[in-house]
Every structure is written in C-alpha cells, then in structure tokens.
Image (spheres, rainbow, N blue to C red):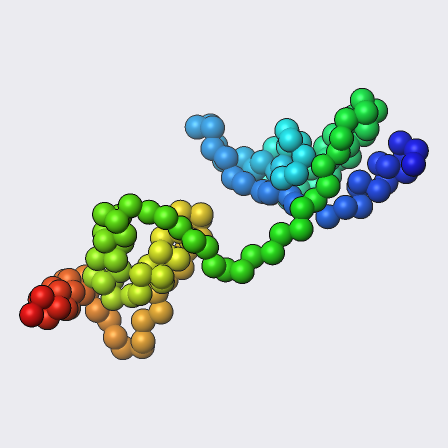
Length: 151
C-alpha cells in the first residue's frame, strides 16, 4: 500500500475525538485531541473551532508518522456496559453510604450523581412531585433509621 493510500485509509478510521474546556487563568479555551494518537491535539477559542481544526491536525499527524515509517495506532472498539467494579476503603464506603442515606437515595444513585458532577454533568435526584424534603428532615430520617437498626 502506498503512503497516499495509507493516509486515505487512516483518515477514514473512526478515531475518538475528546473535547475539553481548559482555563489557563486568562480565560477558557477548548482542547480537542485524538485519544489513540499520542500528542495529537489542538486548541481553539470555541468547541467548534477546536473540533474543526483537529481533523487537519490528525491528517498531518498521520502523514508525518507514515513518512517517518512509524506505526499508526488504529481506533479501539469500546463498549460500555454501565457497570464498573470499584475497590474503595471501607471508611469511604461507610461515608458514602451515610451521605446517600441522609440524601434519601440509594448508594448507587448517590455515587452516580457524584461521579456525574465530577465529570461536569449536572444530574438531580428524582424526587416525587410534592415531596420537598429539607436537609434537616433527611438527617432526622437517617437518624431514626440508624437508631431502629441498632435495636
């Protein structure tokens, strides 16, 4: 396969583009990078600009590596089940379970919301209509539950 044919081959592969906001203290800008291609990234003033420009950067990255005879990684097929196995210290497990109880949600739901917030998503707990529960009421419910378990 010629270098030109190789370039066309690699350009058509479904590489994973990651887009992230960055703040260097002078303001937010956007970084787009190709997950499978080391150091293949570009930044732009807007998300659209960064994504538009990453395609040209990806092409130049592939072309340069082909010309130097370097291996070009191919995209990895990823499937996500929505389940993860996570080992945490027992003390953290207890703390998370306690907070979930105070929030009146399952530990799974609480951890999902905490991870989503940390990743920049903002999910709210689904409270039944009309069931406006204050933090004080949740703490009282939790205390009552803990006391009843001790008996």
